[in-house]
Image (cartoon, rainbow, N blue to C red; front, side):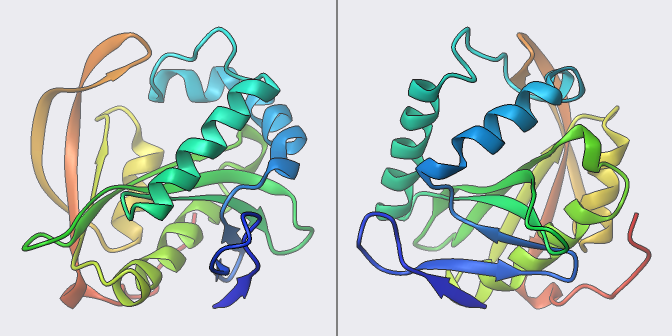
Length: 201
């Protein structure tokens, strides 16, 4: 793992490296690539995400998003990353560690999205696998949680290949695309690391 200087002039921002991708916190200069990829992938992402705001892809909305990410990181409540391809440094998606809980829990929730042109080449599996050691060693978390809608077989495959275990089923767990949706719950604890290398799809 290497470190880049934070755009806020604070502590260096961690860069997490996988075999196919690398991840770093978002910066203002990412707006163009982010907005283009999200717009191109709207129909692909819409069924699996909260309803998009009317100004979702505007520069002002992106600035608000950045301020939220930076505040969450400062307060140790969450960490957001954009994902870039190792081959050409193109942005391919994003990943968040959110809802960090300390004390006796030491846990966080993993969420992610992948742009439509990059589906099916193992990039998201690689990104999740890469961030797991960072979460356990640098952030000193003990447990990671994730949730996927039953129909989202791609996301379920990512979690299972990254070593997560199915732990339960939550009815109407999250409001997705304007509707309350059931989710399968997954978990991974530190003593389960590192996951065995398996097929990358």
